[in-house]
Image (cartoon, rainbow over all chains, first blue to last red; front, side):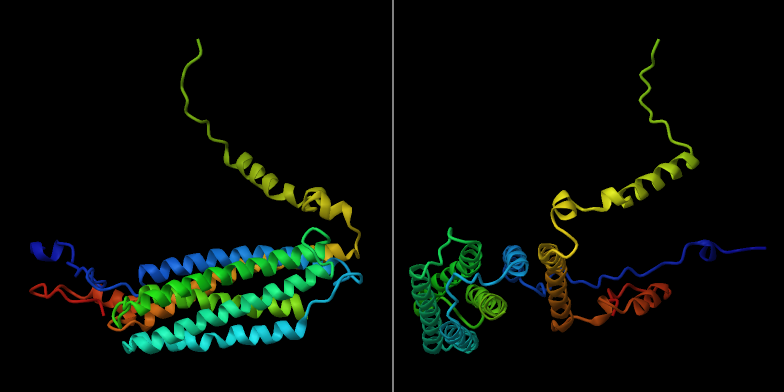
Length: 206
Length: 114
């Protein structure tokens, strides 16, 4: 039986090249880096919350001889922190419209609200220390100051970042097509506020 | 005279199976299953510290999976929602395999999978 060479040859296959090398990445490198940072920060807070849970669930909490945490003041302060998400969102929308005036104003307002949150926290801490709740005095004080203090340190870092970003925005550093640094700052601020959604009920309410 | 032949001698399959079973079953013995000396002996059955450690460990165990899941889901949905991207390149494997089975065209048109 005669067979031609073509029928014996391996069938040719088209090699797909589905991914174009020139296409931009779906998630930019800065956003990816920010995701990694936030994941690492989340694990830091997970460890602290785990420590807090051990002490919280294993003994009478709060100890009877120590002052109670100021719930009403902190609740009002929390509302202020969550309200700061509104100007942050406005800032992100303004930069996409190239609206520099609104951008600067919204960023400064966000930084101001964050700073006010920190001032109220500091005021609350001073009162608690005067009433005998200190870092080294009891496990209650230690877990409270470490957990809430760690969050306050993150808020402080975010406020500094916001201030620098507002300064850069005032100088016209951001455009509708180029505002990656501002977006990263916004993501970090959202993260800091999202953390407080977990920490406030856990430490103050539960 | 000793030889320098460094070839490892392979265990017979039967002996290998016994070793694998021992390695698997040994940690399940009652003494070793007590995860640590503190948890096993320091606290009683109804000690609140045991419950506290249990909840804390469960929380810490769940957190990495939650974070990785959320980040993974975010990346997946960003990839799906991106303009100019086609779903076939991600999930439509059946169509891709159909295209691969198709006979070659006369001239390479540089076509895409999708």
